[in-house]
Image: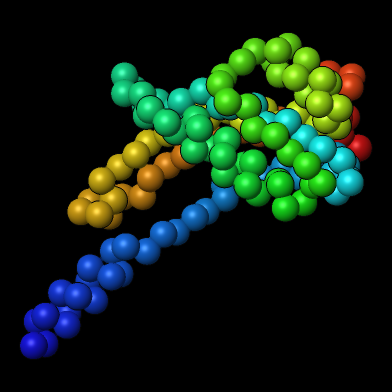
Length: 138
């Protein structure tokens, strides 16, 4: 019975998630909660020659979910598009902000048995939709 409890505890302990932020750059100005945003669809991440299908959609959906609780309205792109195309869509919906997520690194490791955590690096650029410029740093 003790062995079964120990095995069960090891299994449960290996299923935990840990997140660490290595680098965070605060925005130059706070976003207004009364404004709207358009979130671009990120391109799928890759590591070496392997592309992780659906990773771009996952990142964009999670970003959309995170910002939608802070803004009056947000819309998520359905496909990847160029910056110019996304700016045009953001302007058409009268969005104040355009969120441009980019996967810099995506290493999906076999964490369950190796103990090595996944490594994901994401860059999120927020554009002023009307001007098409990044907000200036203070």
